[in-house]
Length: 159
Image 1 (cartoon, helix red, strand yellow):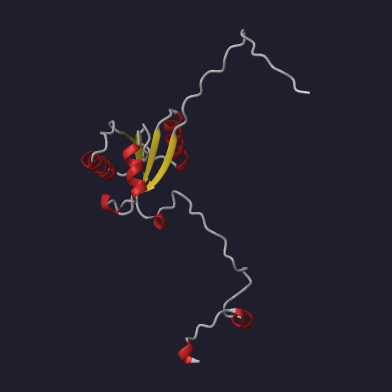
Image 2 (cartoon, rainbow, N blue to C red):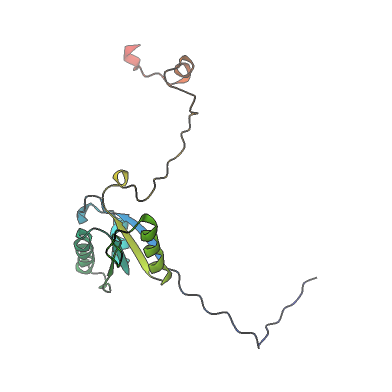
């Protein structure tokens, strides 16, 4: 048996939820706008807030957004820059404090881009996800048993 429910007109309706923001971590590599991925360019073009700790990133963002206007995309509203390297007191921020800055801006319902300089292998700020090895750790290429089952490395001409 199903129970029918009726809305209580005296009960207040729930407050509308604010639109959740979005956060994207974008690696800038050596800092050349021509070397950014297409996805990175699109994220920078659509960003409301750019959080960075390198002064050169402001120029990079200006170049990317100016190119979007030249191509014919509608002009994006001015982007707001937030310094993720130093706090309001001038002291360097910890990793946790930087994360709080990012979350604070995203909770405002804004599209946040956190620019990271350098390449992924040289930047420990965002941990890498590693896939587990399909081979057990105990298996070694140099053991006789693994050589027996491994494909031959010799070419047919050298046999």
